[in-house]
Image (cartoon, rainbow over all chains, first blue to last red; front, side):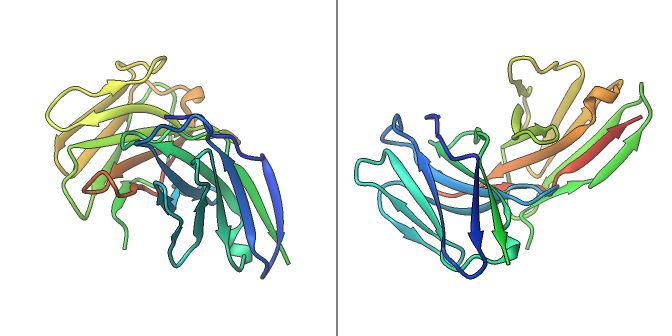
Length: 108
Length: 116
């Protein structure tokens, strides 16, 4: 899997959009960009994934740059329950390899 | 609803004993399952790949004789921590991929193992 780089931590005010960046400059053509999050003492929760096009679901939006070297996860209206560690992973369909992720703190 | 069920959610055992953790795929048959370990304030580390009907594949540094994996059916994989030591205390998590390449991986809720 291509290496991904994320900021170690971010803060966001409740109700505002949370924009979490991820760099994956060595991503290969067959690797998807996956986003997971982990709330304390729980298993990782799937958020969204994409290959080239931007994606949106009920949880978030994923914006992938045209050269695919970076992406941004957008939580449009962050709530306190969105406080978690967010992992960006480049993967071509085998075991997911987790980096250190971004610890997002949503504040009242 | 849950796609992957892990049992137990937490367990405390004495040093030297063995503990078995179960991972069940509820929605579909899984020929491959993955086992992870997570120490406090660290990320998930892949331990091994569990293959139905064949031997598991272990990541470098993971002792196969200590962490026994059995994948006897398409819906169940078990991880047995043998002769547990306090340093084996960790959060163990299993994972299953979806039905096709362009799907997501599903994770169990994790098992918190404490060895005393």
